Image (cartoon, rainbow, N blue to C red; front, side, top):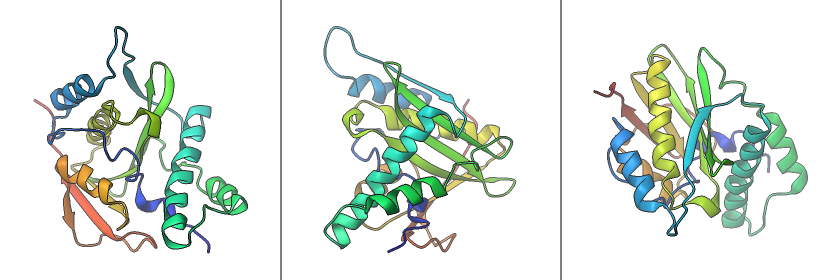
Length: 211
């Protein structure tokens, strides 16, 4: 089965249990609270930093491969009982470079935890006022530490900077945690806004500049 387009689930598989609060329209206060609440216990806790990065940087490429592998394997394990064929995985990873996340109509954010690449989120402008949220991902071992909340807040700020007044995304039916995550952060389920092969649920969020 050719999975071209499977990544149009937009990364919503991928920090689905991060313990986040329900307000990222502003994003700053709730994201900071989430990060503090979900930080690991101990005398020295690592922290998140998030910044734009070229789509073809080593960190971005590494995160894209980890993201696609998880999304693809999850689909195949659910529907066919096996992980993705290695050859197919290599073809599909290589087929989507991420060039859509290039200024002035896109941006890719890379999150680092303790200085190491731990997550990402991308925004691609579809028109003058509509951005699409894609590739939202936090590594499994770092989930529950507030990274997804911070990525969402930064992605929304970045989208505003690109001129967006709303963000849209799509996801698959089996990614139930993803749908809950976006609903908690103010994304409302809507009618389909695209015909992507694997898209089964569509969400929209109106953006406003933080005060």
